[in-house]
Image: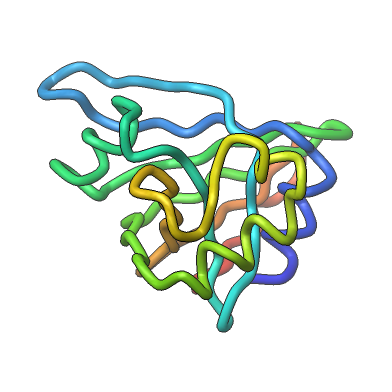
Length: 130
């Protein structure tokens, strides 16, 4: 999982895909954190992405950097604990102007049953499960 985290941090931006009914939705994200040996992302509960993940937790992330990419598929599970939220906000101090670990909007979610596939043009895929 550390390799997945390091790749996402290096890429800076990744794209999160969710499902809205029968319509795929993709948007850019940048938050990623490891807390208690789980890979977390962050969003706001008022956003459509949150509503989509609550309706269907299956999601996929894709990031590209340096001629390589990673796809991460799994379920994103909400964690309502203040400690998990604060860990994310500590990792991204700029978010503290918009979010708080104790507000009703901040949401952190961790990957469950995830599979990360690292690939490059002409290279053999590498699969990591976490």
